[in-house]
Image (cartoon, chains in turn cyan, orange):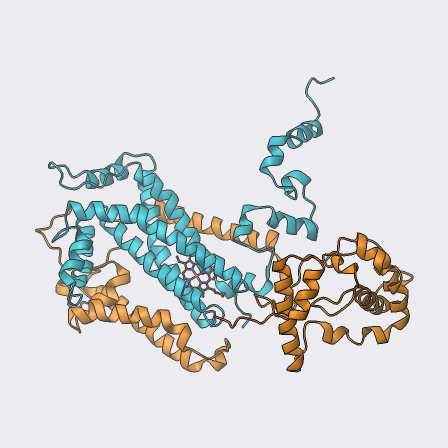
Length: 256
Length: 291
Ligand code: HEM
């Protein structure tokens, strides 16, 4: 006879205790098991944190690839991928330029590329995902337009969407400065010069953006904080509103 | 603010006499006033309009149900059971007996068609705990519920499975692309050395292209700001309720125009502008584009 309890007995002991039951809700498939019935399919959604995002049932036509082209979801996933790769990059990057003759930001970029394990790959992933996210968000907007998906009751979600687009652009643009190479410096210079032409407040707007009269170490620190903290935070809030409204407005629009 | 509703004094006094709290009596008396006004205006109230014929349609069932009504009302945990005592007409205007009879009749009617149970609805109505009244909801709720049945599928597994595949596909694509294509890293930033050309990131190149034709304030501030505000307001001035392409020709043409315009400007700015942001042919002069 084996000294070990039978697998069923182990399973029962693991699941039949206070801690397990406190983690998984009464209807959870991790407590009751799962059989492929309508009831268990519904329970699987309802007793899952994803219930915050998805209802138990969704319109059949919304699942077709040619309805959403998965563009909103792809933008969202790219944002998640950017967050994960971005956290990795933060371990190796210091937003310091020209302080005491040390160009830490640029040095750290070179280190990421040359010495950090997977540093080069992760930086590439972060960079390419960022461009992709801007692109998929644009396409998502076009898809929403061509489906008339912004019409009542979804008007406000379109407005939220435009704000998301602006935030996506701002995230991408603030990130563009961080490598602190010639490309970064001058792309940002071109972009921010235009802000200087804001009527009446032009000089002030530019000063606030750059943290000075021209691009320098203060700009780098300022844009770094915006890029890794402020804009992701704001974007996340608007994303929550966006997703919440999709459900409240009756799920995906259509069919056409 | 809405006008203060007058209190139906008679109902109020009656309720107070029954020992109801002042707050409840006031609320019910107001409800009675509103109801009286609506009846006077000829409006139908609540679901009664449909069920009004029910007792006539099934008088036998109604009679049967009337007898045990008091007992059921007492023990069933019905939120309105408190009215059973005096048989007083509350704001609803029905005695408990009448209400029970109607429920029984309605159930009987339904039972005739669908139920296989012998005895039909009347038997059902006699059982304890067949249903419980938890709340009264006005016929037009706070949110519009569309009763229409839609063609739906379960989120799990259908939607979750597609999402999972999409996540895998994107991850694979990004990892492979990043392993193959190196992101640029140029020389250290140098404020004194302006590269030629200096280009903004690609998503701003349409604006940089406009800079060639308009004053910087127009290209850099006015056009983007106005464009953004108009974009946000779009759903509010497109009053056409249809989402069918054939009904939206104007909208399609207008949006496609702006889409193509910005795409063309972006492409020109990206590939057809070289040193000094002058025109170049990418196939002869080379590519002046970096991501
Ligand atoms: C960070 C950027 C964004 C993310 C992550 C995002 C995410 C999503 C997701 C996941 C959906 C569900 C349906 C689908 O995938 O197409 C959706 C729907 C929607 N989005 Fe976005 N979105 C973003 C930006 C935008 C923009 C720029 C607009 C428009 C200006 C917009 C307007 C809408 C509208 C109106 C819907 C409802 C569409 C329908 O019911 O068919 N969103 N969004």
